[in-house]
Image 1 (cartoon, helix red, strand yellow):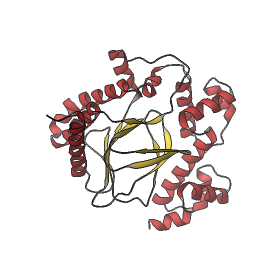
Image 2: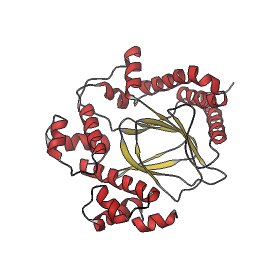
Image 3: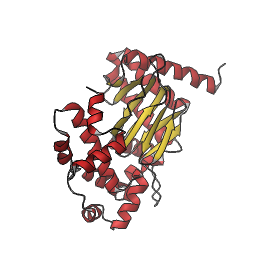
Image 4: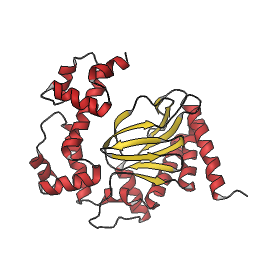
Length: 299
């Protein structure tokens, strides 16, 4: 008779085999299950910078380190990463190799899914003034891992996906809400609270990242003072609105530099910088290379 730790160990191996089977090359792979992505990385020389949307990440093999502003998070097969608010992160796998690549799944989450399950199961949030950061690392449990294996396993029987995938995803969200860190997602449902206000401010910054940041307008949008905006924004995202906008600008600039034949100075202006030299300095500070050097690495 296997104990709980042994069951979890074998489930982890099963998940790793499934992810490796359906992601034969490095990268972020979409699947026939729309919200499910498979991630494979056999190199650690290129950090991944992205806007991480609300999601659940479960590692099948290896470890990963991500940075949210100046905060460092490391997680592996005994953990999961959960994100409840769009946040710009930088991350890389820890010592992967072609023989032992980093393998993981990412399940994108929708607020309406979470809210509906909360209502039906009465896993309601506490209406208090304590807010959780929009990203955290939690300890994996057997029930959540088992559901993850069953979800990825559906890729082997595509005809079953329409009927069964929504049920398994629902179970995974329920497991998240029932966990010790469930409050991170429950706060999404507190309409009119500071979390909802900051989420609205985040959306405004994301959609208008190339425009000058007007803190007073953002504070008015969130129905709070400028000092309250700064405080709550940093509580949830680990950065100020200005720092958040800067990361959005630089990540968008990098995407354009690596996919378009556009001059560096032109892209700097397009994403909102008034000085190409300032853009180059801040780009190198975030990505570790100047814009020109970064382009050459991928040519």
